Image (cartoon, rainbow, N blue to C red; front, side, top):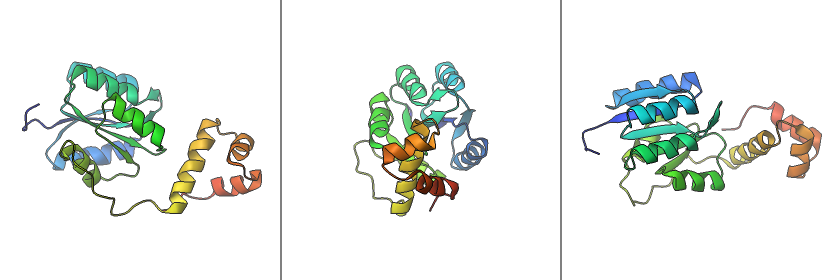
Length: 177
């Protein structure tokens, strides 16, 4: 990869976020190609392997790690950052095993993404300036379990060992900051 090349593949199914990140990264000198699905991301990765990529972990048609794997196969030196709204240690480890250089929780802004993409290989990342609050971490965990249970409130409450009505109240509220 040349130091000059700044091609970037952005794979994100949330259109407003994808458009906002595209504009922000283009103003920072990247040539951005967009994809909104695993199939489209894999096709673009095979057609013109980018020097950089930002891939959402959970896409409507599958797992973004399939795109990361394709990118790593077609261009091993490509620097890939995985974004997710439902982060956990297991998926972070899997992302790195598939070839990602970093794993960021949503909402990540363009500066966070740029810092991850341009980080020195092997360097230690700085601690986040605005870490998630304990309430937000709890909310993210509940949402992840709820999603894994197929949006079944009773099953989610059982797995989390909480009362179903308490869980319903939590799910009805907006996410904490």
